Image: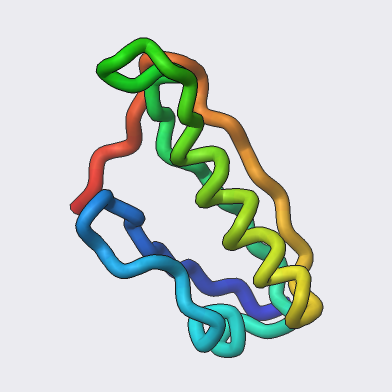
Length: 82
């Protein structure tokens, strides 16, 4: 089985996931590590932006026959970018 890695950091000002991204990894196994956003925004309202984005990307990958797993990062842990 061929293995490869792809990373697409999703930061607030970056473009959203595009369907053509899924096409480039059609039919592959993918692990998504959502951003570990605090569960509440600055006004105290829940948002779960990282988890919502992960679910959206997963749905698009499933559309093209991918196998998707979402792995939640423990609270307080972040993965460095770069």
